[in-house]
Length: 546
Image (cartoon, rainbow, N blue to C red; front, top):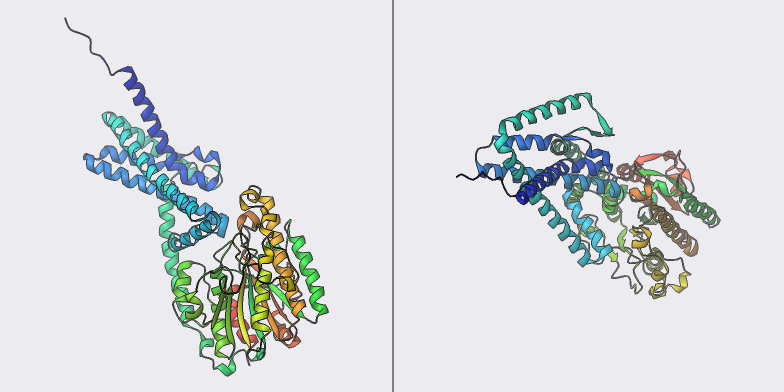
């Protein structure tokens, strides 16, 4: 008597169906993840991913287990990398207004980590980094296991599986030719991983071309050869300050819910400055950066080169490009940098910009609290500079001052105080607790935008109050933004334009730039001239030359 042959236990069969379903779902989602992140629409899931079909077909054709495992790991790595790059694109678009550059953007991640560390603390930043690393490793393992499981399930049905893969590929080609899209920019015929690889190749090609153009511009600099006697003759005897206002973009003064408040400060400032005998001329510059990485804008303005990546910044600052600060020093000015966001020496300040003295958060006598990112309030920065640099006997002085109270996250903010009450800054001690923490403010974009506007009002009010309080007839200010604020404030698709003003009591200073066509006052209108920021150095040196 023979017993009937039994199939696999019921539980094992159910588990096999569940495992196969999970594996198929994992591979499907992993293939579509880059497009899903880019579009932020669930409709991006209604697509046909070519990568997973081709991957399974190739795995079925490989006869060696070791080759299947190696290929599965490689495919998983590529899919995870494509997803990471898509996520970085999304973050970079939101913060600096452009996609992540796989050629030159890696060093910027280090800077981004520094910003996160400043906001969350070292422990929080390390924890977040570890979580991302664990998630990436887990995804690679899950996708690899899913590919190998599906290959084992399909192996006994290899011929019909390959026929099915061919049919799906043919359908994919039809969809690709038709160009069907349910989400703009995301074809139903999906190939996110292949698209990411093609984009990387294109970035490498474009980077090589741009680098050649940049190298040519950097190697030709007639201003570096001018004798000291031909440099900045129109500013002889003046103290000149280049003041960068953090995140001071065109959106601060035009066309937004918060620009009327800033405009009112600037219009009142026009009247106050006029009463004290100042003249101002204003326009816009197109910054080489957006939303952050301020030093790219600083170096672009000073060097006359378009520096739009950390890689290019490192290249330029390791060389001998003739900067505005170097021009002033060569012509006989004493040069100073005042960077309140720094807490330690800045080697590039001496090696590249040639500043003779560097002021930072640790050597200006400040004993007050930090305001989120800003370690020193802007008004205190002006007060220290006035007391220790301008009010004492000195040779003509040129300085770059970075005003950082308007740096993200724009909360809490200091208040303008009477100048004679600032002391060592301890008067600010109660103020941070009077504002809301970033964790509360950043839950509502409208609240973020409101506080951004208030931060610009504070910084510009401090500057105007400084000028009218100390009323220095010998002072010339170049005041400009470094970049537009992040997309949460500027909005999607915002330009890179920032206001710039030249302020002086001596009318001869503004007469020198009459041909520029800049507008009177601190508030440039929508019809004001717009230059690229790298054009400023040459035009400035020409206008104030012999």
